[in-house]
Image 1: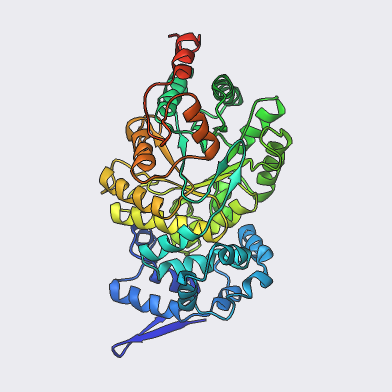
Image 2: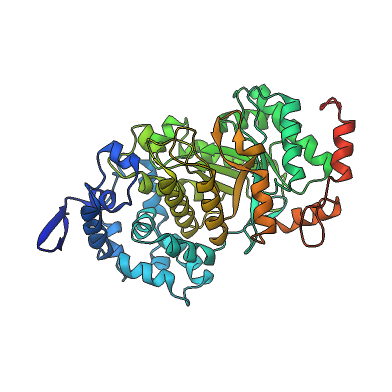
Length: 463
């Protein structure tokens, strides 16, 4: 089905829905690389106008990727709830934007329509929204998850303490983790990206992190971000696995590139739940996504990278995760060229994930060859706090020495706590106070004795 609109006697025609969505997408280098972007701002505006007039029901009648060939498309169709959709089923994309922004559209109403929305509907409305629009709607939508603490409560910001090490050295990991804890970072998870993916190293890392957590009685969860197959093998060998991690994308072909499919993710979810390490009914999965993942694997089928990203959220929400984050600038400037594109993508991803009911976090980051800097990251972090993001990732000095990219520093978390008044998860906030790291207002006051004693007594650290 073709779509068209007219601007000053010039007719703009878009041959199908995937073309319309791609042309309506705010400028980004990945779509230009794929050859599907608008030729310029006028064609983009025309596409956005045509998209705004499109009924939401149209997304139920035209597939972007055939369900006959793609299990993600089949999942999206199977999980669509017509009863939940009924509240917005008569609206166009433009009217849906207005409905989202109404004061009477509260958290409860947003939550009620969650399973009536498809990723394509949500991606579409984001394309005609300003940053301010998406922040305003995201701030209304809470998604609360639990393992050993409570993440996603209104007005709070959790952090992932990311103690990566280029050789997975145990002392380096622990020293980096403690550095983050001293800055109050780690209530979402203390999570290591391993340099290798052997089962032995995976077990050593999760055991190391679990020892740290237990010795200091930290109300948090830990994770080694190895492949789900490695996690399953480690669980079978009795390793102390809290969260099972996996990167996912928006098409079956892209997920195969990650070495997974829905059946394997289901097996991993069941394995993680079988350990019962968290509170009853705890969320046990941790997913990571990023705009450009499907395009980089030549598995996007001509669909724009932002819509493909939102399709990945359909995969993630199938397994009721504790955490989901977009590594927004990690893939590189071929997909998000500069700070402006990275900022826009981070706000889009968070907004779309929240509308689909996901506990969204953002790795506020960029690669060293991108046209971006830490001031761009300051801007994105501040906007995300206004949008009530569930968590962000912090590393020592904002420089990940294993993955070789720039993220947030632990000091940035302090800025969020003290300047933007975004305390951590309540259980972790109480722990920080009890060990003497923060005062009654949540401000850092010094080095807690518990951490100092652990460093001095730990044979692992060698101090």
